[in-house]
Length: 161
Image (cartoon, rainbow, N blue to C red; front, side):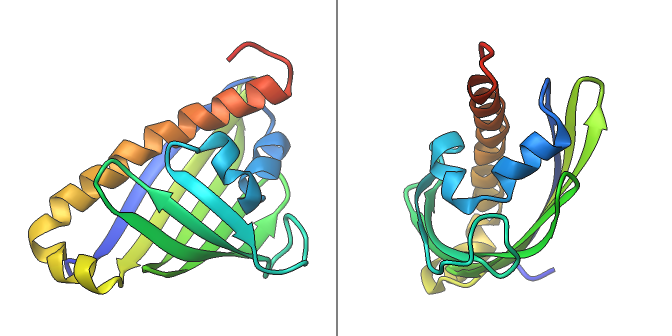
């Protein structure tokens, strides 16, 4: 695999939220800064297609623990209410983010697959020597996303986080 290509397989468990409730948040890119604000600094819609609509696009600015920001377009590629969110990204990296949702006890299990190719010239150049640091940076962001989603849904549903 080229040094600028990454694949991450992860899972989140979101207690006391139905797959449909989780889907409604994950399928709306504009909500990213509200629940994953440690990473997503800004999301601006690029069209008027609406939330949770295939083909809807937004411009995003994100940052992990390492001292660089990433700018990219997020496009809803495949949406099945309560079951699946697939998002394509274009810009500093091209990628495909897939979230499969399933009931788990009183909550939702989210199986995540994130495939990405780093394209930003300086990061692509540094990828052979900083590959492990880039992967670590991603692993820093993921638990913040899970915790933020749990917190956001608990507050939305009137429960303590």
